[in-house]
Structure formats: C-alpha cells, structure tokens
Image (cartoon, rainbow, N blue to C red; front, side):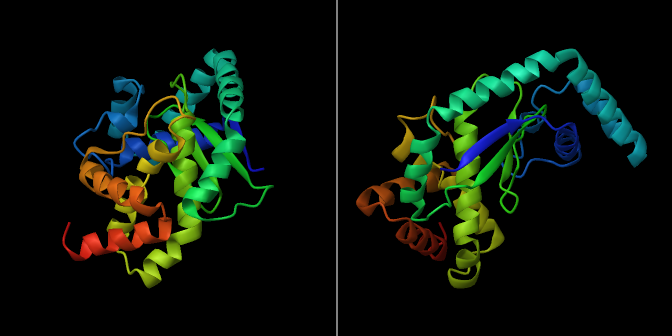
Length: 232
C-alpha cells in the first residue's frame, strides 16, 4: 500500500516562502493574503524590499531557523498528529483514488508531505512530494487534494496534452476543478469538503453532474474537452 511520510525540511520551507513572497497567486489572484498564510507582514515586507538575492535568502533562513528552534516541539507534534490522522484512512483513500482515476498505484509508492510556514501548498508530481500548512489543525483534505493532483498528472498528463490537446490553462483548470471528486467519492473519509477555487465553481458543478451519470474518469475528461470547444 502507498504511504505518506510527513516531515519538516527547512530548505523546502525556505523555497516555498520565497516563492509565495515573490510570486502572485495563480488562482484567486485577488486574494494576496491566502498564499502568505500566517507569515508576519513585517517579515514579508522586509523580504520584498531586499534586492540582494543572498541577503533575501539569509533573511528567510534566519527567520525559519529561529522559528524552528523556538517551536521544535510543536513542529514535531504536528508531524506526529498529521501522520496518525492520515494513517487512519490511508489504505481506503488509495483504494478509492485508484477506482476514481482508473489507475493502479504500485504498492510500495512513497510520498513525502513537507510542512510549510506559508499558506500555499505546492506539489511535485515527478518527485511525488507536496506541502501541508504547519498552522493547520487538520491536513487530510490538503493531503487528499495534492495526492490526487500528483497521480492525475502522472497518469493523464501526456494524454491531455497530446490526445485531447488541452492547453496548459485548460489542463490546470481541469486539474483543480476535478477535485470535486473528493467530495463525491471520499466525503465520508475527510474532515471537511474540498471547496476548490471560486473561479472554478461553475465548471466543478458541470463536471459533478456529468460524473454522476456514469462515474468514468476518461469520459469526464472528454466531456470537459467538449465544454472547452463550446467556449464554457
């Protein structure tokens, strides 16, 4: 059975903190605070004002090292809690994900969930790693959401590009909108619904109605492509 390991890596956290400070959000671009999470405003401003890349790196490194030194026990407790909470549904989640996406995930597959101080949780499909917010009390929905992204891309990325001819923007929209499936097929496992981004609500509703007709992921992708042809 696939497994998820939770850990804190200050270099990964630094990369993500720098990313959210330097780049505007891709989704919900008017919500500039969301990706920053609980990062102090004074710290964010200090990083943004610094023009020397090495100094910028040092500011973030010092901030995160100090935060880790002062909150080591809390971070370790979070890792333990997140691990124990996810383990309760790990096996059932992956069984259902394979059915939903119509894929087979090798039993020894390992994923890493890195804790981050930022509010945005990126993922890496090739490396099968993703991030969860250190400040969150529960991260099961984030874990389920990012794992679905990873396996969707690995299984259907080339198909969407080469066969369906989806543009990068369309691919990204479907990737995010299709997480409505977590609510449809795994709602009883998760602590809350997967809400999605506000700009995807209309397409999520259309996909949800289509899914309930036959619950076939390949046909759902084809349906999505037809919506794009119609200009939806």
